[in-house]
Amino acid sequence: RVTAANKIRLWIKGVDSEIFHPQYGSHEMRLRLSNGEPEKPLVVHVGRLGVEKSLDFLKRVMDKLPDVRIALIGDGPYREELEKMFSGMAAVFTGMLQGEE
Image 1 (cartoon, rainbow, N blue to C red):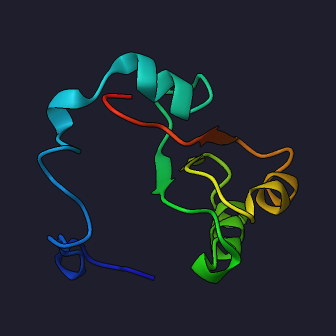
Image 2 (cartoon, helix red, strand yellow; image 1 turned 45 degrees about the horizontal axis):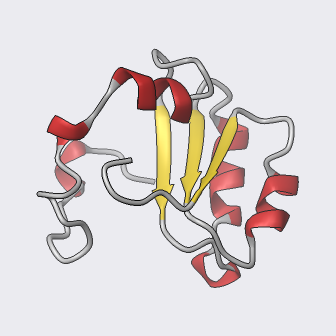
């Protein structure tokens, strides 16, 4: 429910901004993560897919934003359930990615 850009802050401890720097962005990866629609808004979750992450919340968000795409990068015990939950939606599950990928 963020309503203003000034309420968004970078949490330095959460993301290594050198490893995950925009210089590593690519059109090919954007195509892959957006399910072939790179012009659409894209929500990305990177991390373990566990029930304790409350990722079902993202499903309720996506239900209200039909033009938005979602990519879940990572793996975990909740992946199969999430794949069922997001079935029929513009969702991409990449599994674990390592290195430059």
